[in-house]
Image (cartoon, rainbow, N blue to C red; front, side, top):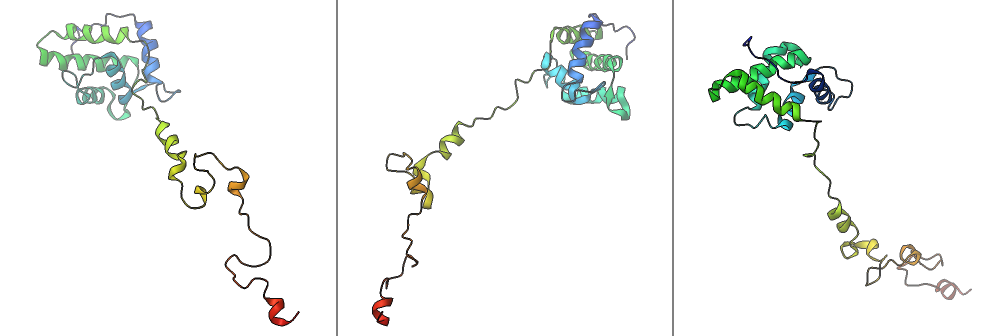
Length: 180
């Protein structure tokens, strides 16, 4: 790591932003994980999977943090320096110039974004579940031809309460057969 690399940013301001990314996904966290470090770089537009990749940042993060897998603010600055060194090897620019470009983007960033989160689209589900033409069996009987519910009459199994099963054909023949 180069000793000449300096951070040209407001330490207190960037520390607040660093805290926001540290706590992203774990509100009580005090040290940044590699995943949150990558999110910080990606949200700032630093991690582009061409010049600076997740692999590069993962290796740099592991070099600094070792087996503990989490970095405090000062260690995160060391990781950024390693990332700038890797980038300068590819771009043939001085390390300080690459570090300044990275830190400028990070300093502009306000808070973690959740814009990429998937949003549930329940419109298709509701339209499918409430389409009466797709109902089968006893449920189909609860609606009239226009799809309007029949109410209680659609739910009631209105049968005669005579004591006979529905398919019995010799109803009222017992008395005749036995002479009563």
